[in-house]
Image (tube, rainbow, N blue to C red; front, side, top):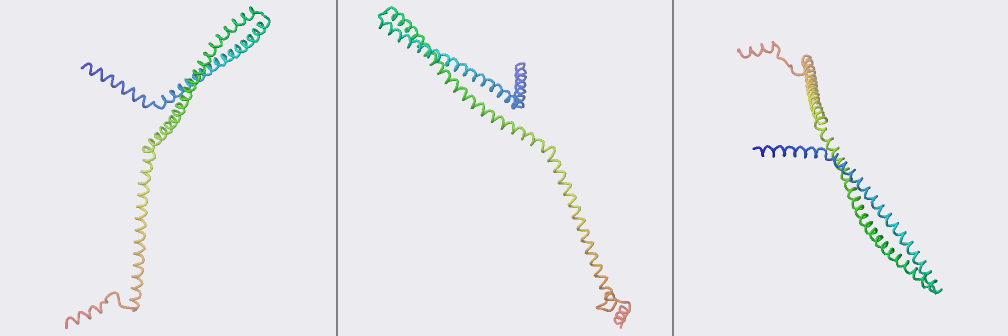
Length: 225
C-alpha cells in the first residue's frame, strides 16, 4: 500500500512537472535558443583562437625557412673558403632548424584540421539554430493565434449570437407591423369600395343592395295567395 502511495505521489509530481513544462514550452524554447546562440558564439571564438595559433605557427615556419636558407648560403661560402669548422657549425644549426620546421609543420597540419572540424561544427550548428529560430517564430505566431481563437467564443461569438437574436426579433416585429398595415390598407380599400357601391345603389344605379320593406311585404302577399 505504501509503495502504491509513493508511486502515486511520484506520478502526480511527474504529471505536474510535465504540465508545467508544456505550458511554459515556448518560454523554455526561447531561453534554450539564447543559450545555444551564446554557445555558438563561444565556438566561433574557439575557431578564431585556433586560427590565430595556426597563423603564428605559419609565421614561425616562414622564419625558420628563411633562417635555413641563409645558413645554407653561409655554409656554402664557408666551404668555399675552406672553413670546414664553420660549415659544420652551420650544418648543425640547419639540422636543428629542420627539426623545428618539421614540428611546426605538424602543428600547422593539426591546427588546419582542427579549424576545418570546428568550422564544420559551427556551420552545422548555425544551420540548426536558424531552423530552430524559424520554428520558434512559427510556434510563437501559432500561440498568439491560438490565444486569439480562445477569446472569440467567450466574447465576440456570444455578442454576435445575441445581436443576431435581437435582429431576428426586430425583423419579425417589422414583418408583423407591415402585415398589419397591409391588412388595414386592404380593409380600408374594401370599405371604401363598399361605400361607393352603396351610394351608387341608393341613387338607383344598378341593383339594390338591400331588400326594402315594401319589397319584402309584396313577396309575402304573393305567397299567401
